[in-house]
Image 1: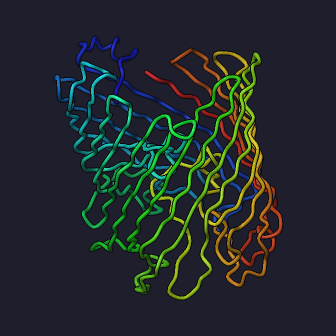
Image 2 (image 1 turned 120 degrees about the vertical axis):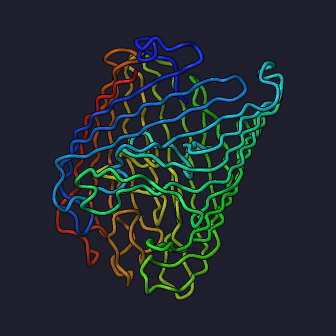
Amino acid sequence: MAKPGPLAGALGAPDDLAISATVRTRVEGIDGQFRPSPATADSLFSLRTTLAIEYDAGPVRFGGELWDARAYGEAPNSSITTSDVNTLELVQAYAKIELGNWKKGAKGGHGLLTLGRQTMDIGSRRLVARNRFRQTTNGFTGANLEWTTHGSTRLQAFWTMPQIRRPDDAQGLRDNKVKFDLETARVQFFGAHLTLPDVLGGVLETYGYRLAEQDGDNRLTRNRRLWTLGARTFARPAVGKWDHDVEGAWQFGTARRSAAAADMADLDVSAWFLHAEEGYTLKAAWKPRFAVLFDAASGDSGRAGHYRRFDTLFGARRFDFGPTALYGALQRTNIVSPGLRLEAEPDKRTDVMLSYRALWLENPRDAFATTGVRDAKGASGRFAGHQGEVRLRHWLVPALLQAETGGAVLFKQGFLRDAPNAPASGNSVYGYFDLTLTL
């Protein structure tokens, strides 16, 4: 939603018209590529600009958001995808209809029905998210109903057609070509998410999602027909208290192993993922929070007629697994990874985070996470190595201009060195620097 800010004030916008914008510049680079085929070393300058406008007409609000993401200076065989480039796209164009009694606030049940193009953050954002670190975002076209009772129980139900980001060809991405995204009834995503407060010492969430996909006239897919059922319990971090976040999901249905035209076999899907986190925030000046982490997700064995690789749908992963963009080695698929994290706030403008993870494959015959490194015979073992990460954010001008810098190192061991297609490129070293202006 657009919010009143400096831009709205500068334009003299009336109270019923909200206008906001962001401009983010990023410089990043990677050396010691972990992917089998892209450039061993790559660098990128990217620019992301957004403009959101919303008009409040009483019980109905009309809004839209323009999203422009461009990349420059990448290597000829760079790993950039539609996650990095999406030029001049109207990601949101919606009408929001208020339902129930909003005047009573928390004392009265109320809801919001959103129709049209929109972005969605649901629950933990691990399966459905509006992206933040990533250059581009997931977008959906359809209907989204949110209802909150007077006891703060919240139900969200939606039916959408996920937006297919374009350009999606290598030349179009390199040229930052303007090509509007599309949606089609051949790809549908719908489901429901329920939030219950004050359960198990925190908040309980449960959900069910359905992705129904089939080939289009000019677009081949894996024909995923997936059900994903899951639950989550969490308590938010607070000074002097323990917090937790435990989530798991089971996925079933049918899918094809690839999107190749010759691949016509529908496989039985049975896959899962698990996230568990326990943290404690000290009563100290910097409010340090220490957390123990564990993530695991199933991989595929290649068994005839079956498929076990978990599909993260439309989720975000930066907050669990580190930077994406030119990096993005880890994902909720074919992974077993315990870890540690330290977060602190030296002052009101600054926060810092350090993390470490050990890395194993859940199934030695499948590609590890999103690296593309694979040993179909399973002879390269399960241990993949270690990942270290650091991030620093500082508001140069509070609420207006923020700087962020960070990086990650993937220390390759075992599988990532010995698998048949593992690149002989040494450890992967990645770094980035952002400047974000919020208006």
